[in-house]
Length: 221
Image (tube, rainbow, N blue to C red; front, side, top):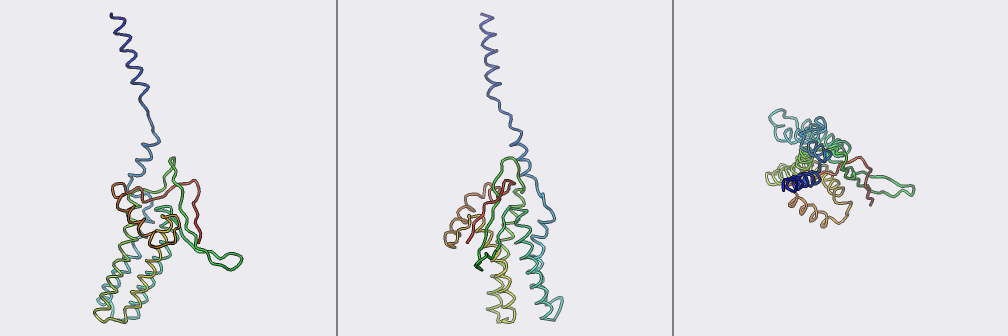
């Protein structure tokens, strides 16, 4: 009886040992994704220029009475923001990039790139992806509010600047949504798909990023 009991105990220990699966790669990936900021400089400049443009626009009457000076300053900040978000921060923070190219026939093509997801290496974190998308969405909404404010208060001289802010920041938002949605050109389908993903992925912000080092998915229009 003792030998039978010992045999059963040994078999149970063997079975328990076989069921154990140690996946250190997943633990490292999870720790990486939970890290707060992996690209602090890119994250800073992703928000710096656009927030500075908004603050300067709101407070320019306090700092200076020169309309031309305020106009040029805000426009420069918007231009710097457009360039940095389009060419640097999108690639580093979420692995997305959009751009335009001219082929040999002189035709213009819009290219929307998204890095393929790699289970072995992650280049962005949940915090960076969240900051990227929140900054990309909220700031154009603020400029739209500025548009209605300037329109209803009859500050017509500011409308050109506000429209420039809406155009530049909406262009980046639209381009990156197309990158995330796979280059779909139908804006209604893009908006519906993006909003549905946003709603269902709020519990896992890491899904907003498409990082990796295994190449690029390229979509052209």
